[in-house]
Length: 219
Image 1 (tube, one colour):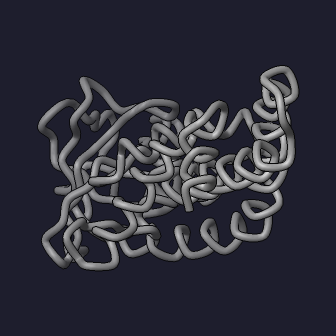
Image 2: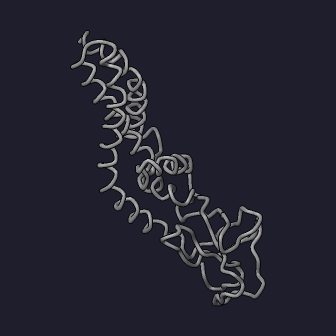
Image 3: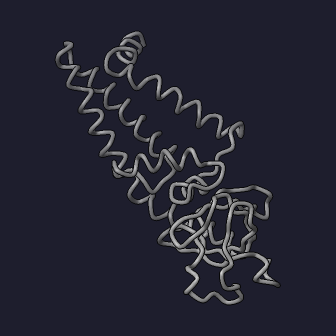
């Protein structure tokens, strides 16, 4: 036990030991219900920037260039830290000498990245398919514009789900030369305007909206 502790608290394993404790504590709180986590919502946030998991979505965007995007950042980071700690611990236990252990750090990082990418790839489609299904629940709901304008390439709005939770979603309004059933010509959307979500773009991960009062009879 003393040897294990020495290796775990020695270089380079100690660099990952604290992070592993944070990860373990985080998931313990999740399992005990002391921390609200919505993996599905987090997966969606990686593309829409929506909801309470916006921070997780922002982190997921940072991981995307590393090939670790498409799943909640909490999942990718947990696997990454766990694998890096395990490889570092095993390498440090097998090798003696400071010079030899210095080589363990880059090997642990490379192995953790490769292992995490192998785990992320099959999960990516699962999370994206479920996220798209969840996002479609917003279609037909009113929302409040939170940006100065909404156009074919820019806009955000706040939408409240039937369960009472709110989310900030990416929205777009068709150009005025694109006909939309029931939309008044020249009707623009600005901050504070009420709009209606009438469709989802699954590729762009944004919603098409129009002024709410132009679509009577829709919820």
